[in-house]
Length: 87
Image (cartoon, rainbow, N blue to C red; front, side, top):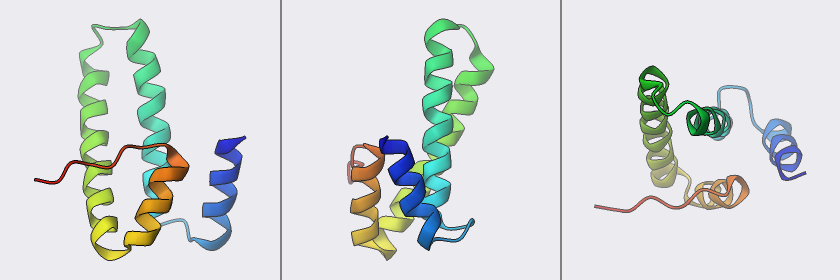
């Protein structure tokens, strides 16, 4: 039910190339790969792909936090993602 709410909220007012929608799709991929790696622990190519996607999502989230702080906070709450640590 939460996924449908997030999808409807994002796709109603955002275009397909928006940062929010890209972060949503990356989060979906990350969750799918994480569940795959629970069963296939030695799948090193999937581990590498997961790390690459995590890095891309992190860069997009840092960009979003600088440009649209309110939208960033809402997206983190909707997708149930922890806020990144600042250096």
